[in-house]
Image (cartoon, rainbow, N blue to C red; front, side, top):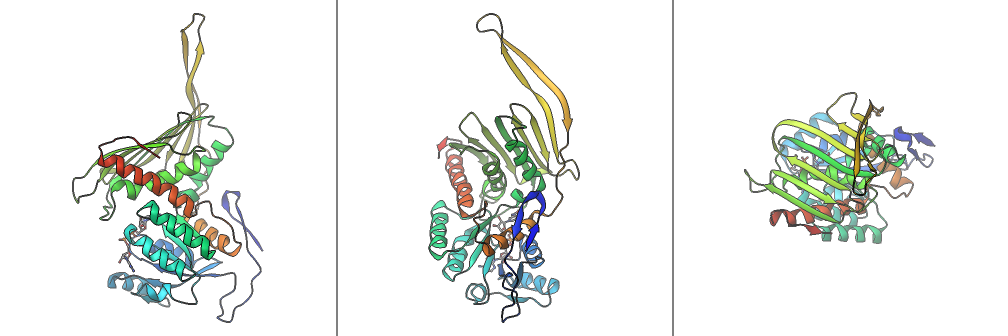
Length: 359
Ligand SMILES: NC(=O)c1ccc[n+]([C@@H]2O[C@H](COP(=O)([O-])OP(=O)(O)OC[C@H]3O[C@@H](n4cnc5c(N)ncnc54)[C@H](O)[C@@H]3O)[C@@H](O)[C@H]2O)c1
């Protein structure tokens, strides 16, 4: 059976056969750990899939357990993660808990033979990420890191425009991701919000980052609540990310500059999220040596069509496909580790007030 999804991606699934438990063989049985802010989105999207079903949810907070029971009266619910980690009828574990808990939960899930779907950022350190990759490889299990934005219509379309050469050589990626809250207590704002942009940059920019500069400041709870991150790439490509939990307004705007075209992505726009500008600067040599002729190009603007579909829904389907058909996900543990390495460098730079850190 073949299911065509949006973005031109095609997932294929092996034929359906019934197992003794009554769950079809091509349905991945998932246990979800963590039902705070993001967990409900994970449960809803994995549960509603043809090829995955949430069979148990765990949260150590009694109020979260109550919320699961209200939304899913028939769902098995527990406050003890071991019930999921050690269950013999669970194939994969989704880890939707704070970052400092990721490594231990993922390690135990892999040790117990379960595939792992894990929230961003993958781990608190790159050493932890490397250990999980090694364990998954040894056990022949999959790790997928929830880099949700990679499954949005806007990011898919931007990737297509770059691959098709519409933007030309890339100059920069410059993102503003600010809002009032949500403050985290175990990570600073760079670790909380920049993984979105770092995973998008990892996906869109063909080069690998070379160096990082980060500045920021803490005002409230001991971790930086405002951060400015600069990432240097080969070929003069530069990435910049402005993240802030103390902004009076929500802004989700990214500029991508290319040699041929420039692009604005405003994720808060309902319809025209992407705008492509035929703008740029052309430089030619004048008659005299050292004479440069600068001309500014200001052509049309158009709004490329962007698929409107819930990103997590597509990602959940892709997770099942990767497990059922033994595929390597593009947002696998390696992708998660690449993001964590930049975040680690960002922390080192932040501690030294913006000293450049080479990767
Ligand atoms: N992909 C995205 O767009 C996105 C968006 C928001 C959050 N996140 C990520 O999701 C993760 C969770 O974030 P959140 O905002 O939902 O946090 P949260 O604090 O709102 O919820 C976490 C939940 O996990 C539970 N928990 C913690 N440790 C546990 C354990 N050992 N066993 C059982 N339950 C446990 C807590 O009781 C809490 O209910 C973080 O890694 C965050 O970065 C991702």
